[in-house]
Length: 190
Image (cartoon, rainbow, N blue to C red):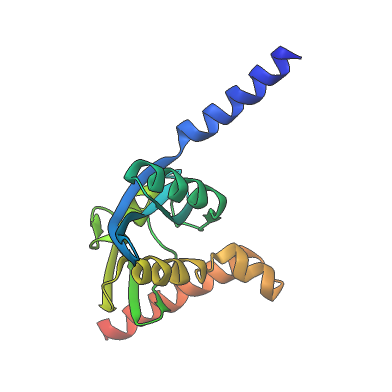
């Protein structure tokens, strides 16, 4: 019985070792009550495995470490898989929105790096994206920026997903895109 418990604990330890946690923002919150002000802290954390899985969470507690632990646990529960091209960039350009926060994410050629600021950079680093260009418009509130970025990432379709929806083979869709790009290059040369 004890060995079975140890095996389960080892699996959980390995799973948590693979995840990368990044603290995005800490906010001190004051609540005014009859006896004065009660201080508490709100934390936003992004968790990912650098292989296409990422999640975010927020936690609030009277101490900073407790808030970070709560946020991390929520982030681990809310993880989603994002399809990546060649394991380094996005499949296509995409826009996301949440509240007043708007973000635009663009694919980038190899060697570009992560060109993004604030909370978006943290998301891309734990997601495992190496080449991306991102722009945030509107709200610079970290909560809205993170939710807008996730809105954009969740709307990404890989060629495999598109092929499944259309009932075609992946090669038909990818080759058509390359043929269209080659035709545009040929037209520009003329």
